[in-house]
Amino acid sequence: MNSIKPNPRLIPRFNIDYYTGDFLSSMLHLDKRSDVGEIANLFADVSINYTNSGRTSLYIILKALNLPENSNIGVSLYTCPSDFDAIIHAGHNPVFIDIEPDNYTLDPQDLNKKIDDLAAVVVVHALGRPADLEGILKVAGDKPVIEDCAHALLSRYKGRLVGTIATAGFFSFRTGKYISAGEGGMITTKDLQLASNIGDEIEKLPLLPITDEIKHATITYARSLLYHRPWFGLFSLPLGSRIEEKIDIMNKRSFSKTKIRNTDLHVITKKIKDFQGKVDKTRNNSLYLIEQLKDLDLILPVERSETYCNYFLFPIQLKNISVRDNLSEALRKAGFDTIMLFSATPEIAKLSYGYEGDCPATENVAKRLLVMPNHYTLGKKELDNICKIIKICIR
Image 1 (cartoon, rainbow, N blue to C red):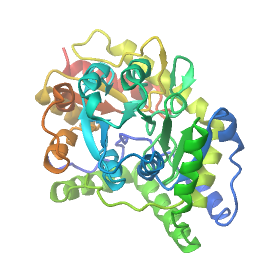
Image 2 (image 1 turned 90 degrees about the vertical axis):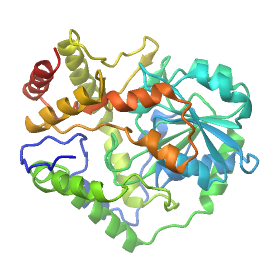
Image 3 (image 1 turned 90 degrees about the horizontal axis):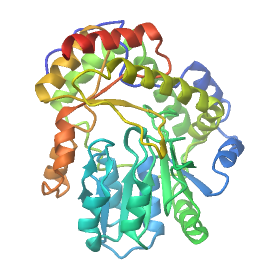
Image 4 (image 1 turned 45 degrees about the horizontal axis):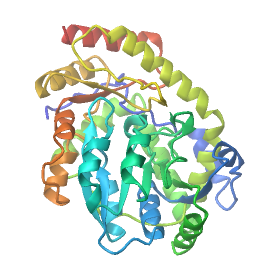
C-alpha cells in the first residue's frame, strides 16, 4: 500500500455514530438497567437476549442448539472471519458456501450441493442486503438456519424483519456498525425451547465489573473521536495503514465472551428510537448514487423486489483489481475514504480455516468490490463529488 498522506477533510468509509452525549449518558447508566421496551416493540414476536458481541451471540446460539461435537456449519465465505471463529469456539467446523454475486449473500444452489454434510447454516445478510431466505430455508429443510444480521438492522425480507424469519438471528452493535455502541450483541428467536437454552448459556457468561464499563466506554469515545474529521484523515488512517502492513488486523480468533455491558445496552436503546430516520436518509443517499452512476461500466447494488435493504454499506464492482485500486486512490485524494470489504477473507480462510477454493464467485467479488461512503451525514454536494470522481475514472 502506498503511504497515505494526512488529510483533515477526509470523509471516513464508515460513520461511527457515537458522540459526546452518548458517552456522558452511558456514564450515568453504569449500574442502571436500560429500558429495552423500544427494541421489544420492534421485535414483538420473538424472544430477545443480549451478549457482549455478535461473535458471542453466534457462539451462544450454536451452543444452545446442542449439535453434536465437531458438526459442520455452513457459512458464507463473504463475511468477517469472526463468524468462523465463533463456529470453532462452539466446537464445530466452518464449511464455506459461495455467494450470489449480484447480492453478496449465500447462494442457495451452492448450499444445495453441500447441505448433506451440514448440521446447520449461518446466512449472512451482507452489507445490509437480505439473503434469499425462502430458497435457503427450502434447501436447509429441518436443519437450523441462523441469520447473521450484523449489517442488516431493519432490513426486511417479504415484509418481515431479518433476524425473525429463520431458526434464530443475531445482531452486532460494535463500533462501525449501523448503531455504534462500542460493543454489544443481540439474539432473536421464535423457538421457545431454543430461547430457554440461549438464556441458560448466557447465564454461564461472566458479568463485567464497573471498572471495565468505564474503561470500555472511554476507549469507545476516544475511538469515535479519532474516526471523525479532522482526526481520521490527519492521524487515524495514515497511522492505521502503516500498522496494517505490519500485523494481521483480521486475526480475531481469540475473543471474550461475556454478558452485555450496561453502557453498551444503554446506547443501543437510546439510538434505536430515531434509527429508522437514519436508515431513510442513508437509503435516499444510496438511491441517489445509483441514479447518478447507472450509465457507467460498473455493477451497482440492486434491491430485489421482495426485500427492503437498509443500505448500511454501498458496494460497487469494478472490472478488475487495477480499476478498483485506481478508483479507491482517486476517491481518497478527493477526500473520500473507501474500503475493499472482505477482500482478504478468501486468502485468510485458506490459510487459517481450511477453505479449499470452492467458492469462485466470492473470490471474484473480493477482487473487484469497493465500498464507498453513503451514510446519512453526507449531503448532496458530497455525493455529487463522489459521482464526479467515479465518472472521471470509469468511462
